[in-house]
Length: 196
Figure (tube, rainbow, N blue to C red):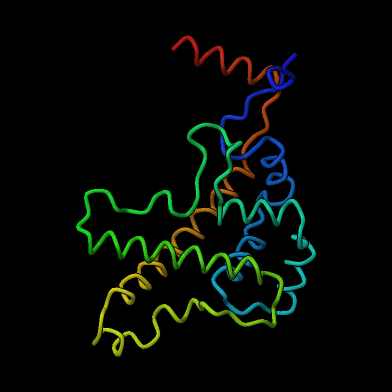
């Protein structure tokens, strides 16, 4: 007998256990997620922020893996259909001239490498980064006098990282604030939806 057929099907990117983890750790916890945002954008943290981050999101914990999955997703063959994503998925290349498509591709590559490094050094508060967030905009005038492809890609990567981090962390807050349905409530909702 196939045991997976009796399990409820996961229809979204996050499992019910992951949503429960969000609810128990992140519900109305803007402060913690703002500290995470600072870390992801390589902004300095106070000692109390470092302590809070390591205490509430310990290295290697389910919550640390969930934050990485949210901000820096990797392709997962077991994800529900149409829920498999990575940072390259929404790269804007369709119907773009080659020059713009290349800038978008390079920006996503930079963004992916940036998050690779940020998550590898997430708890190394004294370490330095090879790809710095401030570095995206440094020496812009000087860089604009030569081949500008990398400069354009860096600015696009920077702005995409900013938007992406805020969007994904706000998604965590929204899901953390979602109401947990009982089995009866879910059944009633599904019946209502099926009669529409």
